[in-house]
Amino acid sequence: MSTIQAVLRRKPNSAGLFPLAIRLTKDRKSSYLYTGQYIDEKFWDSKHSKVKKSHPNSKRLNNLLLKKLSEANDTLLNSDSSSTDQSVNKIKKAIVGEDKKEFFEVSEIFLGNLLKRKKFNQHYNQNKRIEIFKNFIGRSELAFTDLDVTLLKGFEAHLLFERKVSPRTAVNYLMLIRTIYNFARKEFNIDYNNYPFGKGKIQIKFPETEKIGWNKEEVQQLETVEGITHAQQQAVHVWLVSFYFAGVRVGDVLKLKWSDFKDGRLYYRMGKNQKLVSLAVPEKAQIILNSYEVEKGKKDSLVFPFLKGTNLKNEKEVATRVKTITRNLNRRLEIVAEKLKIDKKLSMHIARHSFGNISGDKIPIQMLQKLYRHSSITTTINYQQNFMHKETDDALDSVINF
Image (cartoon, rainbow, N blue to C red; front, side):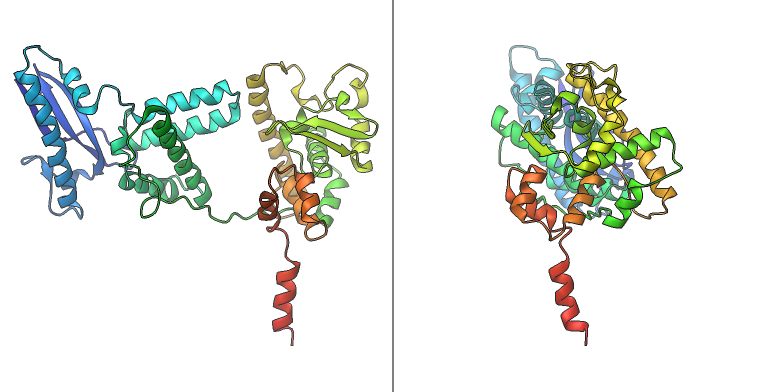
């Protein structure tokens, strides 16, 4: 004999809400089908196994429970009338669908593909986001039919108001969930009817982000800073080399070798997109490089010492070390900014923003595209508009300056 019942599971998510589920019981063994919906314990009527009317969405939630109960009951009736005995887990699979993948199962495949493509930093960040989502819902399985607008809006609110992340970071989480959902649709034929993204549902909109770089006078102070430690001076050198080469990413700066410099030019392949880059070595950059020439004679020796002892052929090891080194460099740069009494953020990525800020309207956008190594000029325009203020400033001044 098999039984089914709507229940409130005693496993709250990180928001303190409890999941609504259907309990399947056979031969004193139980399994649970989750609806993807969560409520406060005070709204659950345990006597009648339904959501209390005091809940603002009680009617919709109770209709959902009835639908799930009906689906489960049909399968259980077939199981009880079948000549072959079936376990509760087999019955659950019959209800959910034997071949259907659930969200976190597909997530593991998606993350595994990132590792195969040697996207180690991306894998690290995306894996952390999936774990945070998993902790929010309070369980390790999530059917795609349960991944609906209500759940995602609740997760977004959790990110913004409980975890206190920025709106852009919250969008990154939703983008990851959408990417995995699309991957599941393509690779595992997940039904499109329940797709929670798009018009009238969850729409991905990027909030404008504030990009503030250092100005010319501030960079000059950084170039001549005194009274700092050797470690802080090295951090400043790495930052300035990045800045002098139009904002080369920190990972690429740390991996620079003496063999990358030929005839007064820098030749290197970008780590992000494997593009080949050639830039003339500015005089200011050459002065810094000259101070690190101790091991220049050694074949393929690194310019900066930070990755010394790292197996450069092991891309995962390099990616992990670069992340740690960057964190340390940023801490040292923050201390330097405090000593200079400059009330602006100073990190390795700010070198790129500072180049954009100082270049402003001075350089044609097509040339900036080459310097930034952007594939699309649209990317350059969108990036540089954060620093191009002359026209708007002049327009404002023309109106109010009377």
